[in-house]
Length: 123
Image (cartoon, rainbow, N blue to C red; front, side, top):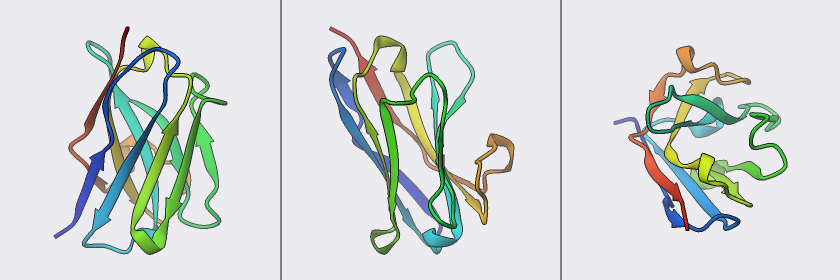
């Protein structure tokens, strides 16, 4: 059974840090690009970051460049999103998703999705 399970969300103060994890099972993670997406209350879901299946190339939304870092450990079938200098506008449900053989993680082509983890940035 294919599964993506996000964890690591929670409540953090502005300026704080969190690391999200996306654990994959039921498929070979190394063959998939993994994207992190988020949906803020009342807003559409947006792509935050992506790491490609080959060479581990990364990309980031302009709003998180320099603050977020995506990484993958194929041996552990896990992808991480390290989030530093968090802002209230980073609040939302964060989802990971997988795209076979991909590199840029367009939302419409992602094959598998997790159920999300809530991140709340507030004082």
